[in-house]
Image (cartoon, rainbow, N blue to C red; front, side, top):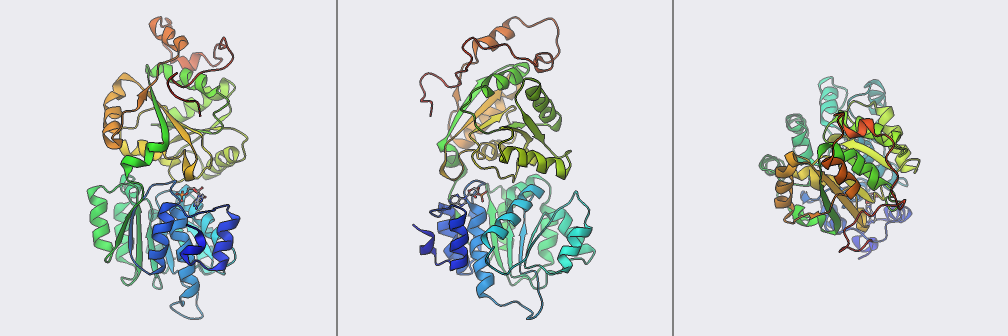
Length: 416
Ligand code: AMP
């Protein structure tokens, strides 16, 4: 199918072509006609499926075709609620790119930064507002944002908003916006509370399920190493020497680990940045720019910080820790193999994380291939040094590999 078949108007088709998109992704093919038909949509789709364009393109078209609620005044007609500031910025950027030949103004509001410039932008008049729930609710309570003319509400990554504790703010916001509207609801998973919310706020929704969690991950090569906790950083350093790893995301459970892992990588000569909730917005943006420009090929992130960051061409995801929430595993590895490309995910599982791994395998209905820990690292476990500092703290300079390269795949698998 071509984008032309979706009856999109020329300025949007032009923008899509200039993004290099050739054919619509499955979620785009399904949702664009429904949204143009003004249906409420409940879409089960995760990041990486092209879901942002799936709602942004038809919304831009509806704005073009529709009438402003108060002629002569610029009302916010579209509100997109999303869990993180990175995701909010990314969605706003996408709206601007897709709508660059259209006259609409997009603004983004999120917490963690001064609100004054956000208020100034809102006062200048905005058509499309992308917001994280907490900051938006603050601004609504201060009467700094008017949503009386709202026509379309998008809830993006609804399950993640629940995980992050934003669901009450979301409910409060929804209770204060016009009832008569079109609602588009996107969530990677459908836990009971999210299903209940969707039933309460959608009217006769059409349900789309392009990537059920169990199958999303099939095209990603998934491997697991059973290791001691203290082996994880040396193993990561060892694997990252492979030049086939062009762009990698490393996930850690805690902010402290994200810093520690990133520092250890830098000490061993692998340039890396860490991104997590304690980093300033400027530092996060620098880290993202750095990997996007190819100045470094490794970004270490916590789940929450990584949520919503849009980095193309991630070839490898490393799970330095096994997430205790199984869905996070799916979100994490979904950062690679995006938009039809290939990707690999390596997980490092310590003995106290085995249950998490079993839960993940149950969720994805698949056994993750176990790969043997390189001998060099095995030896380290068998003969631990007397000094009990974590190995990555004392071994910033990894030993040279005899062959100067590393084999990171089991013999039985192809090395695509
Ligand atoms: P999303 O799921 O919205 O986070 O999008 C994932 C990635 O796919 C983004 O980098 C988009 O730019 C890209 N993308 C979206 N739609 C298409 C398409 N039809 N063809 C190729 N890439 C796309």
